Structure formats: structure tokens, C-alpha cells
Length: 334
Image 1 (cartoon, one colour):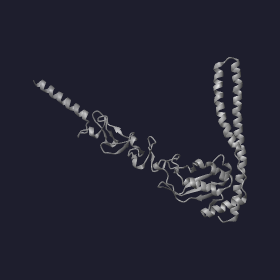
Image 2 (cartoon, one colour):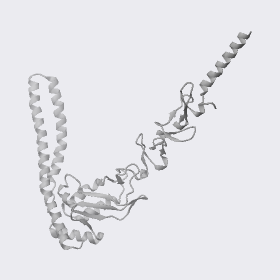
Image 3 (cartoon, rainbow, N blue to C red):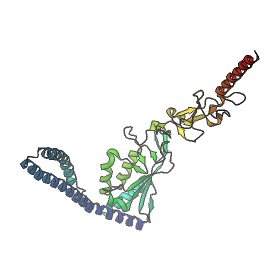
Image 4 (spheres, rainbow, N blue to C red):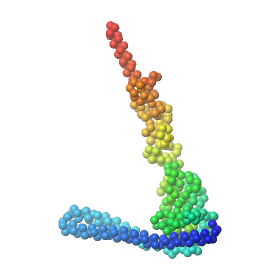
């Protein structure tokens, strides 16, 4: 991107977006102030209701209003501190076109040829391949949407895109322990990243994002690296390691050990929903190892059928009937 005209256009576009942040900040604070004043008005209204309830000796109503007011005042003390921190926050002096041009040139010095899409107004940097705790995650494109810098206080203006994705086994959207749906969980770096964009420090912005991508925080990952090769049990949602999962050959889904079984005749792996419990022996079996007794029409496993494909129970009944008939024949003969 050595075209001076393109560099100048980009710098001016970034500057216009950063300049819009000042107005955006005022608008956000105006909205916060209005919300705060509405809460105060509710407390004042409750104060009048409280007075009226006391005068009329409505003690139950007065106690209810008193409890609500106490709760609202407790909330208000926290919101005062939060509102003050927003009102005290200053964006600072905006950069100049020369400052942003210098940032763009420094980016090219650090990362080589920049990826710039003038039609979509995006500026990208590609990381080196990232490996965290022996898990290869590949390279990532950090794509800054210049048109959205002015919306910094409402939404993240950049994406983190896996170029050689090795997603977590439990979710294809998680391409990094701290990236889901191409959005980075910035953690403690949130304020630093926002400040860098507010001040037009593009190099610092990209370096901060790359620094987070090269760091693993085991306390707040979308998917832990120890479970990276795992995926969710189709039944209970438990995240499993690939080596600990069981593939049901009936419904063709993956299950954890607690949600799986196997056919005790042919050893076919089954989930609990697909396993059929034979009413004759109570063993879990697959449907291929189940047959219907032609006499009682009961569905039983093949182990509960004799060589004539009659269930053991019916076979026993046959023996008893034959025995009774033989006894009757003997009695008649005598």
C-alpha cells in the first residue's frame, strides 16, 4: 500500500471517524444522565406516596414503599459512581492527519504490506501462526472496519478471523480460546484498545490485539485448551475429549460415557435412547439383535430365543402343556 493518495484518503477517513467519537461520547452521557434523572424522579414520586400512606395510617403500603425506596437508593449509590466515571472520562486531543499517516507507515514497517479494502473501508493485519500450550491455532486476520470506529462505544469495530482455522471440537465458532464468532474477548485489554482507537494509535491497537491472541487466560476462555479437541455430548452437552467419546451407530451422534451403552450381543455402540432393553433378560441390545416371538409377539433379543425362534418363556409354556397332555393321556388310558 505505497500509493500516497490511498494512504491520505485512509488517514482522512480514520480522522473523520475519530472526530465523530467526541459527539458520540456526549450523546451517550446525555442518555445516561436522562436515565439517572428518571430514577431520581421515581424516588421522589415514592416519597410523596410514602407521606400519603403515613398520613392515612396505611402501614402495609408504607412499609412496601419504604422497602422499594431503600432498594432504589442502594442502586442509586452505585449508579452515581458509574455515572461520574463516565462524565470524568476524556477522550483527549484528537490526532492529526500527519499522526495517522505516521501510524500507517509504521504499520507497514512492522507488518509489511497492509491489507486494505477501499470498497469495504477495512484495514487488516495478519498475525504469525499462533500456538498456545502446544495447540496450533494458525494465523489470524485482524480486520478493522474504519467506518465503525465512530461507533466504538456501541459495538466493536473489528473482527478476528482465523485464516487456517483449527476450531474447538465443541464449537466451530470458537477459533481461539478468547475468540468466538470472530469477536475477541478483550478482558483487561478493553480500555487500552478503546483508548488506542480514540487517539488514532493504530499500531498500538493492532499490537494490543495480537498480544491478547498470543496470551491464554485459563480463567475466562470460551473453550479451555485442555478441552480443545473435545466436543459436546449430543444428549447432555458435556464437553468431551475425542478419545473419550462414543459414536452411536444407530442415530450417528457422539455421546459421553454416561449417555452411551452397547449391545451386549454384537457389541455395537449405542446411546441410551437407541439401546433397547430386552424384557426377557433386561440386557441393552441394538435393534438388529431383536426379534419378535411368533407366539406371544413379544420383542426380545436373540439370546432369549431358541433355535426355533420361539422365546424361552413360550418354549417353557409349550413344555408344560405337553407335560399336562401326557399326564392326561396316561390318566385316560388307566
